[in-house]
Image (cartoon, rainbow, N blue to C red; front, side, top):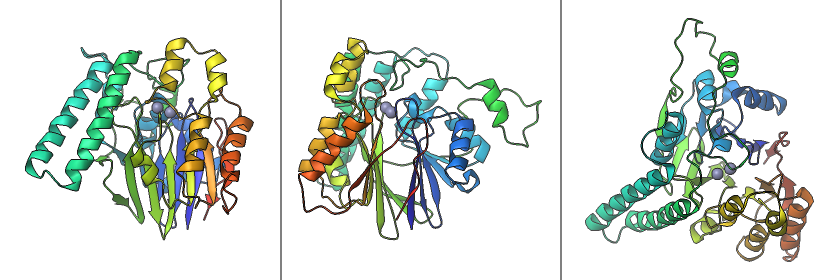
Length: 355
Ligand SMILES: [Zn+2]
Ligand SMILES: [Zn+2]
């Protein structure tokens, strides 16, 4: 048995529960702790049974409730190391480096690592994989620098750039054992941190997890494939385009949460400032309905029972446009079975999808 419960999807917060019969993980924690707990109980997911939290990238709409929730539930958080460091950096009072410089620094480190591996084992899979990763990260860093947006950000240009830990929130979500006399907690404190590498499979309980690199303007963003008892579920949102490594990661998937962020015309004519439009449209921004349809028609293997369209923009998309575009793309392959299309929402959890 596997189950996917999308608690929220969109630029104001993302979070999804993935369960097997024995294990339960939360992917991203982009709402307040209180709201995440509320939505879990509404959707019939017991927060006390979560084994871990996995983070795709450090943008605010994916991490807003992270530290408070992880402390409250006392469970480990899985990041890549660059994502963890970028997150710590966002929560730590301003240092000397801008975010763009920081991304550049991350890129150099990756290149050095790839070069070291290539020198010691020039033909290994790892060398090739690191070279590919480093190429993608270089692109991300270059575009992020070129777009030169603000230091801390989210996918929603209207949210405040600072990352708040609402004192009331901290209080409500504090573990019972914490006394009122406790000092102000370090916002970057987590009960436990585990690192994974994109492209390298790992397990939590009886769920096998394969993270894959996605092109997006964050330090080391990724999507995930989850597998248990022969069922495979995948999450791929926040990507500027569909590179070959993502296309090949999304094979033989039974439930696919896929980004369908914006309608190109609505974005073009919509309210965002030009710099933000440019960012969304860039190769490290978000997938349009059109790009998603193109993937579904040309590259998708057609094997999913459910396709969940997610991270829909509230300003630059309409649910029915996203649905129509995906259904038309799938309808052009009349041999397909299954492939029911659902839309994930920003304001309310989706009914659990169980296979
Ligand atoms: Zn993002
Ligand atoms: Zn996002």
